[in-house]
Image (cartoon, rainbow, N blue to C red):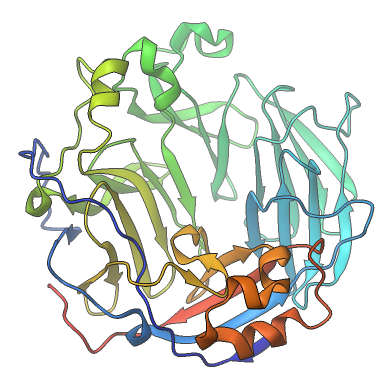
Length: 392
């Protein structure tokens, strides 16, 4: 990985302010961090960027990385999953050189019909592939060798390891429509804590939506380096940490300063939901690393950067959309104290067309020996505490 220090000019997100009254419910926030929306503060992006690292991924010509749907990093490896294009999992070293590929689509005992999720086991030595259509989880080592499989009792959408003994599975809250959950007393729940034999230990977060909106129900799930797992119900105002024992409220999004709405599930129809598209709400777009957390508020003013050390919230609006040819708002992964953005080789190879003059030297360095058909490039952003306005 190469290292570069870079001062960036511009800000992250821009949304329309909404002045409708808030129906946000207020949980007990004495033990959690409050993330208050603020429409008037503006923190320059250059004040929070400490440095940028990058890695150019290098797969093979006959099986390139199409999309980066999942990204996991260990001290020695970068694991990339492409669910729908190559339908493969790629294991790179930390310099982006391909070490192994798992490309096993099929109906055999060591193969998957579909890839719905890919995670690493807590020891960071095995790749677990969730095959929803096949109702199974397949395990491979980091050399790409098949190890074993586990049959699933129902059809989950996502999975995360809570620890070595507990696996979290998510659903749409289909109740008896999933035969594997028909006899389970709490089959309206969206989160299921499973033991290593795939038996349900506990379940959490009941589906609040009507049957016609069941496709909107799956919670947003995030997992970070030390194993901490978070879940956010769609259009709620609270981010929960998930443990084998239950949910712990970790962040509360206060939408009242921008007239936002939350927890409006009951009586909601598709027509009402469409009419609320412009209203300010939290869709669950949340990303955390060791030092900071990002919260993107839909239909509102700035994206919020929360410092875990100081407890302060910084507000980032939108002057310049891109950094090195890609939208900063599409940063979707984190590792250690860094946030990670995936940028297509096409954009970075066309530096004169897509890159602002401010970033041209760095972009040219990255573009060296980079062709437009190459794999995506990973940009690692390290942030710092800004010296500008914040709200406690």
